[in-house]
Image 1 (tube, rainbow, N blue to C red):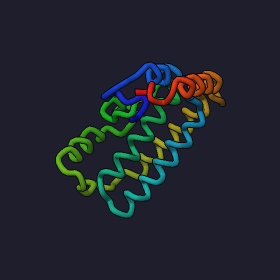
Image 2: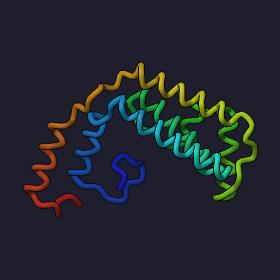
Image 3: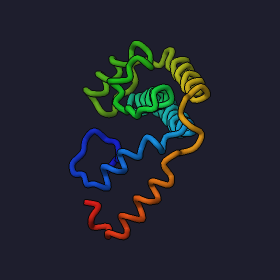
Image 4: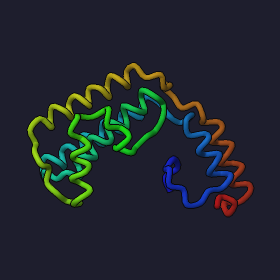
Length: 155
């Protein structure tokens, strides 16, 4: 289960508490995750020239930028088009038609990924997110309470 996924099959009081504590776990250091994931996906794209890793690179760069600027986690690329190049909706549409299709053109892609990377780095450097998580004590208390009640109460 992904904690902040909009697709929730089942929940519990512990899950609801974790969701409420999640914003206190976000820091500007999360940008490193997105930058690293984007580099990995870009390298994969340059080897295979498939659309899927290219879209992953665009998605994580846009997600990271949005997180750094707003403090909100949004991973749906279709809601993040404003952070990417104008042709991004066309790439998403092409991917919807075929899972392992080659990218229609590689012209300008590297420059766009570099631009989005620079935007994420700038957003990280100017982010209002804290350097350290603020929910550590509350998370500790939640885990202790959940263990005391028995893990069966998590579902």
